Image 1 (tube, rainbow, N blue to C red):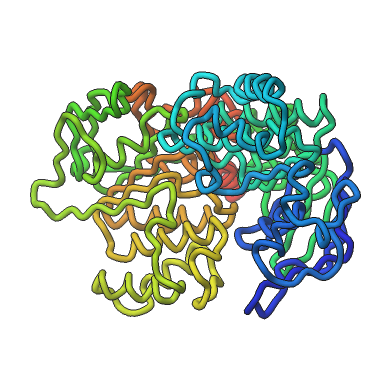
Image 2 (image 1 turned 30 degrees about the horizontal axis):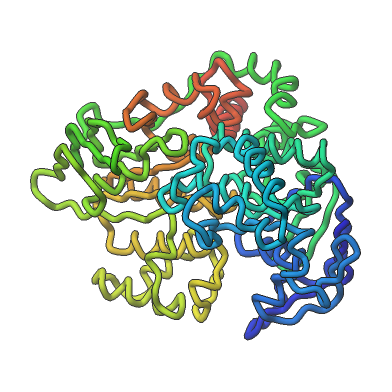
Length: 529
């Protein structure tokens, strides 16, 4: 179905190719997962499938890409539209109509699909993606996760033979992500659609994949079965890392696989206490909210929330898409809508609040990475190079001369984070801060966050990334319909939740282990004794 024949892609003004001598075959009716570190060329590989690269992006393509016998060199994206449907990382930029129903129909209108067929396909897609209740909503009023599902649905209505998705679950809560992946699996198994997706949250996707394509930092590509590729990949989900640490063979690809191997491990660790970070019994309150209310017309996004955020605390805000997480952060920060309640910063008025939104590119408006970092240093009164050093700690080797708009989603996010962290705000709010970050970048970012908390800063992280929460959060609140329905230490909240529990917690349940590092540290301490 999809063939790359000795493909090398080099962008203008780039000294090295984004992809180098790629030869790859993806059969019809397969779900192919593309993995690799942030910025290694995953989006380039996906864009080459329908000819967006290089017809739209520019650059030079050597070699040949064919899809269903069509050569992308001679068939531009508009001629591939009936064969390949593509959903890129930021779906909101692809919307061209006002309402969900109109957006689902738009692609079919361009392909001259008969009206009766269009109506039927729209209804089928609304049900398939679980968005029937959104049909008359404005696409601009939806949460990020809801927009993601609409974007996928708008491509599916054209019934493409190949579906290409870049980070399709990154903006979705765990339950919604499972629904989307189940829908994609049905397309593969029942309709023979070929699905190619790039995803950093491998714990969600790896068990559904038929094949895995791994990109390295030099533009090289290798492919094989999920188990084979996870054994050599730079990135892997927690169950694979756990299997590698314990020495399980074959490596588990799912929680179910890991639980089948874990009886001895659970028994061995049954008497070990799970270490948690010690915190003061009476931490200082950095931010206090009382009876906070946010409404959008008749929709109540935040319903009378009371919340204390403490200095030196990493507080994770979780909940399904549309539960009010983003509205809460913006209301607390002061720039967002607020129809009732009060927000009080520390009594001495020392608090400075920094917020990184879901669309980090909104904070970037200069023509190069170096200019953004230099401006952040000067406006913050920090020494030259401060912002750049923060960026390098999260995602190294981003070129100074690169335009922020040319960066990958993860690199752009890292730059926005560095810009916001540079002035050292005492309260830091992050909305989906790990979207587009690979496993290593998330680990480095978690280290930065932990250091900031140790310095006494209060940090709020609104996220669907349960694995990141397990690593970094001291406390979790869960929102539902704008109300706090759970509030407590991370292990107390997530271990008992079938939705928000990380993979290690599911494997080790009912014990309160959350991360691979906790387990390996305990085993190492046991060996020392």
